[in-house]
Image 1 (cartoon, rainbow, N blue to C red):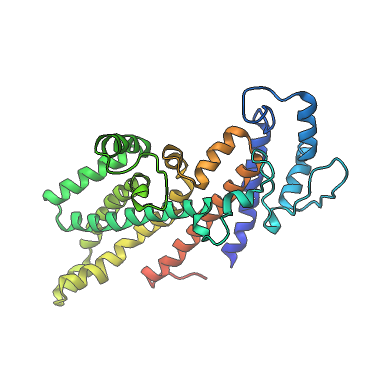
Image 2 (cartoon, rainbow, N blue to C red):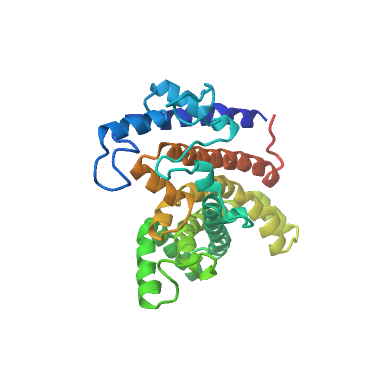
Length: 331
């Protein structure tokens, strides 16, 4: 409960810093007409700023957005909204007539929530995390059990290669090979309901985590296998499978869990490069477009959502510690 309460000032500080950065950055959401290159006439710009409250002092705009200052609807004043504290993320400045809640979380009537932009980004991050953990942990264990052998050298070389290669470079190579060359998977998907459309984005997002997890699992397993209690367990006649799973792997997973928790949040929050490259209809791609068009409400909303995901995953990691090692307790 104490950690949950600490999230409130953390999210408030993040929102304040993000708001200040947006306001000091040159440009605004209405500087050009209709997303083109023609500047907006001064009288139209002033009218739009007045309509959306952008002519108010910065501290008032921040108070209105958070919801700590009540906004009264007056003639010629912007349409009122409840504020972030009540779950209202504000109007979208570039998608006129739509709110941020509708853009990020809206789906067609009768469709599941995971078909929204937020839901698709969560799916992409989860599948990348699943790939990274399911592939990385077994490869790390296999490499540790075959220390200084061919399997160890092979897995270590592959892990080092993908750790050193940026995800967008991997994406370009895979698009050239499997998209343009072999035509196995589409480069730009026409429908994300087809599983093969997810192959390249998920692989590009999860391969870096898989490589890093392989190296970390190998290192921690090698350290644990040299401990006295492992030799004691073997001397008692326990089977190798029991020693590996119950004693060695469980203790070796503590450093890995420290990385995997924030990694899941990182895959969700850091997927905007991959989403932009593959034209993926997710929240990360929306953030990139919003930064270019100065859609203040959208930038604030996505930043707060990403910060909340990271804070929650850090809390989950701390709770997993006590399950992996009963000696760890919290007061």
